[in-house]
Length: 235
Ligand code: ATP
Image (tube, rainbow, N blue to C red):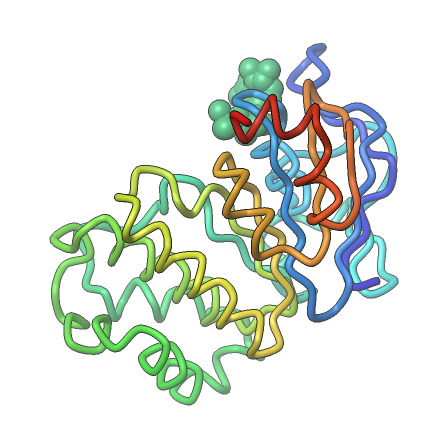
């Protein structure tokens, strides 16, 4: 197991947001975590990224317990985050935003080669590298956010709602891009409200509701579960 979230409890003050929650990501997998608004998806991403501390349980990356590792060091263990809402530096250029992703020493040494790979994946970013990030379309900004994550050379890329706010056409492209990244050997933990698409590309999936895992397994099994079809797929 590349990433193991083992029975974590995470909260904001006294309010518990995740209860006894366990998920796992194996090397080479896309694992989708789906669930309604407020289910705890972003809380899970922030806990893995070291931004929120679990009160109980642990987070293990390649056998190492990172539950107490500060957030700025979690990337040293091969985790990169593409945050909800992209969080770009909109007044900086596309290139500078991308280079910011390569700050850990291992990534810095390979910065130029990784940048070439990112430009190969997103040719439009090479064309627009000197533009201010804020001047790009929503889809292109999401590409910058993903590219910045890849610049850290992660083993696991955590993606929080990458399709949020994008037009249906661009959403389809975004999911294809996630598959391409995965085919290049990066495991992906994908947190999504677009249940249909997220299950379509996943190798494993989890449904979380009110901070608890309520279903998990192969996506084709979940897609055929009547209660999931009714609740999330409108069928
Ligand atoms: P969304 O899709 O809306 O982002 P989500 O599944 O990512 O939803 P979270 O944002 O993780 O859900 O929220 C889980 C629970 O934690 C919710 O009940 C939410 O109200 C609560 N919560 C989230 N952030 C905070 C915060 N900063 N302070 C207090 N409670 C919070």
